[in-house]
Length: 455
Image 1 (cartoon, rainbow, N blue to C red):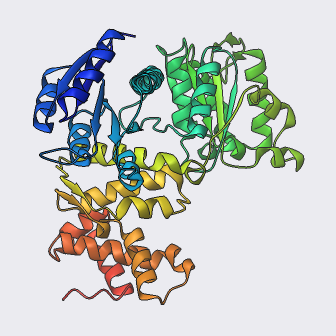
Image 2: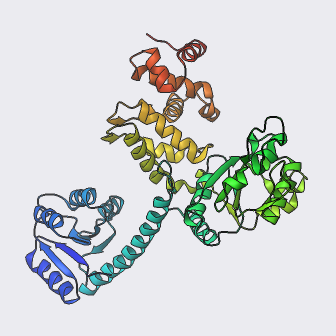
Image 3: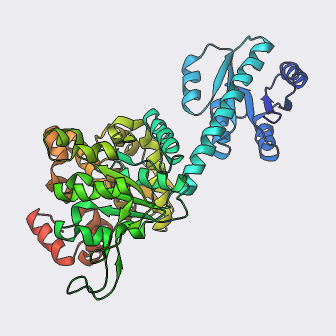
């Protein structure tokens, strides 16, 4: 790692000089400052990696300085010093973003040991950021594989391993809204197939009688409406990836035909008597308990074992709640940019309530919730009321007259959404309907049904 730049701030010149000389002799590039204003000027003009300063300072407190530095230079690691045994301030400093602390008096070698620990952490953090950047560049702009929790680190590791072996079939399981297609796309774009097509298919939408036509294609004249040759999905995805979503909805007879193609890697169009080789990676996904389906003879065991050469099970959002702040920041930024909003402030109660919510719809529900909130916002402030589900639940709790089941009452949620949209649109029904993404007629029906007062 390159030579570390360390800022030492202390109003006692002798103490500051002692630390500065010691760290310089240990190979660090050291910048000394006697006042917070000088320190802020130094970090603007120099590439500071680590800052060391006291909790008690002239001009402003160390906590205030910490917040100013982290607001403008998030990557600067801050070590707080305190000689007053004030653990409350230390805890607050750590909450505000300090990386470590030292209790005065301390030995000079303790300073170096603390900096060395942070240096190792910075190397690890930079590696993780490079890995996340690699993922982000390869995925679509609208949704990214956001998350640093232990379950998500495990998923990312599995994705990278299976992407390196681009002929292995993959089975992805997980509840609706967890991001199964996103994981499939990550596998594709990290593999050697990335320059070829990724074809997603919803198996539940393909009727049994059209299965062969959709997957294998046909030649002109093979049946009455076959007026031209048509490639099937396997041919379209040749050299690329075919993603079979909702594989559990595939009829038993269709499963046998799919298994044959996956194993033989050859297809034959309807009306054509010669088959042809195809080079397609198959990734399948389902939100059903597919092992139970196999036991109950609802899904072929041979197809299950063929797909299940590599299994990735996606955790629910409830199982990785540590990622909610990251997802929240990402989606707020994405939708603010997409909708041309400049959000200057976010009410502090929103994130804690999101952390308490169970998210039965997983990441997809969080995404839609934030999109709706940004639409309903006034453009500069994201308020608790812009989240009807959370706001309604809080009103129930505050009034003390509701049961927890009311949290999932669609009438309550819908009424709160409509009231917020009407408020935003100054009771203009056409504009409110546009915000809610429904017709004016549908809005009138809902206003009547839910007994919403327009006055």
